[in-house]
Length: 110
Figure (cartoon, rainbow, N blue to C red):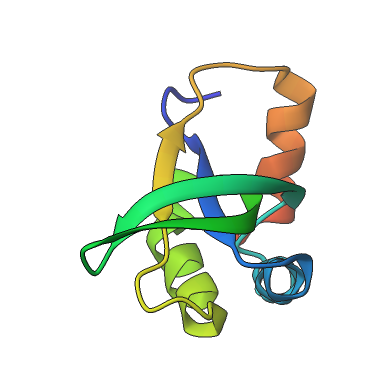
């Protein structure tokens, strides 16, 4: 494994249906090896000057750093929010066989 090759993209969606749409688009485009959709959870945030509370689902996208920007662009295109959360979290280690599987499931060449 080369240091910093793999990342997890974190995002939130309003529901499982919209998260699933993004997940399928990422897997079909070979920009993610796996997408975990978890929830529901409660999010509290300030939006347009007001404190909001919303039910959301969290999404964890397992991919390679070289594909992160393209994966975010694909997911953003189907995301229903005006300003969706997308964070790139580095993977600093893990099971070598699993990381190799991520590599094989995503586009070669980055």
